[in-house]
Length: 393
Ligand code: FEO
Image (cartoon, rainbow, N blue to C red; front, side):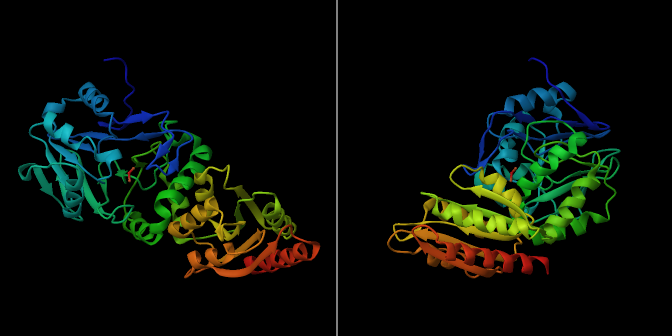
């Protein structure tokens, strides 16, 4: 059976999920430089026991062993599903088979989503709604619907006696490192990156969820990825800013360059912005981790795209980056598009087509043939100064 570390995150509340140290990609989209964890929590009341969420495919047996180290899986009473995505819900059938009396507890929307992936007998389902609760004996589980964070069925579970909130993906961070939030300085950039990748398109729903939980007395936040927060105010304060779309005086430059011409153009605007006191983050899309870009999108006030024209359109990597920027719905207020071409343009037009409609004001665009001449670079400096001026207001 081996040894497992099973943190007791509150009295009789055990973290029984798994760390996936070497996973490096999520959803075939999101790079995971520090792996991730699939947190599952066992709550033992005086009369009943509940499991909140399960684990990713491949970790079912580890979950079984851990539950049996602190309880008896066969006697589990409830399996709570906060979210149907398979990284948390994949072991539903496995658990229901091992725990013959356990009821599967989730919202109506949760049942519909879970049925897309799992066979669930009607007799095992207990449907709950906003504000409902389950009495475990000395411990109560209260349910809070939090739709679209980040799937339609998501909900939070709250344990008032121990002041623990289980918000599933919300407040999460993809990292296998750490159990608690002692190293908050290391966790916040990861949580921000996670927010940018997963939650940012649903910022308004996040704002609503924060309002809903503001009245709760919360001492511990136990998300489904990353460390447990024992000082939840710090992550909640960050989420307050992020969901409200508060930006910094910061410009994010994402670019691709084949022969250095576009690079020279974005370097020129970067230097101008730095001179004007703007914080600049620059990423070459050919070599960058897209998660870093997502993190910077969370609070950048301006986005500058640089792309050469390839076969009458944007460079494919710039096309991918632009599509992601649009889909992630960042709060940036200003945009600039720069690029170069050899014989026929097209990249700028395509960027405009993709980014329209958008809430961003396009402060300037410039497309040059071949290398940027001195007069082109002067135009870029002027665009940079105008952008810096606007960003201050
Ligand atoms: Fe971590 Fe949306 O699943």
